[in-house]
Length: 183
Image 1 (cartoon, rainbow, N blue to C red):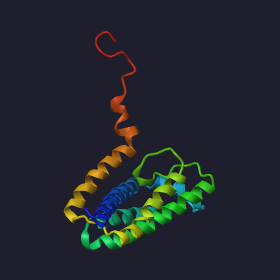
Image 2: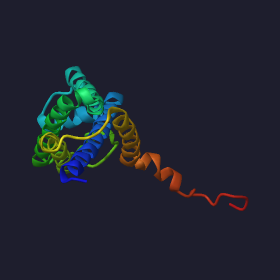
Image 3: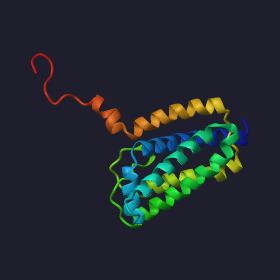
Image 4: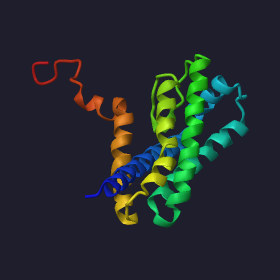
């Protein structure tokens, strides 16, 4: 396999990862925008208002549509550009939050997390921002049907991982009481 062929596969995997990430992010904000609204208030000083809530929901729709665009061959190029712009904005937002010592979680990426917004968000935003330049160097090689399957699987895995505290850990806990007949 040639180096460019391998690079296209790697970038294709990156596209799948970014699509899953954006799908989780959009779904999380569509279900509840409150964490993101509070993070915007603390980071940028935006007032808590219906307008901010609508803007957060608009961002959620943009993230979801971008994720869908990454899956479809004819829309992938523009979706990669949008994903990179979203990533850049996430990176800047994370850096500003860190500089202002923000202590709230943003619920970003569909996670019900208690860690404050900051460098982790900036790092993930940077990864998203790099998608466009990498796709120019090595255009992703990924058929639409295959991409849709991979993104679906990756989104489920990512969602369970991000919310493992609620999805997996309760299944692994032992009951506090003795249980059983003699318990």
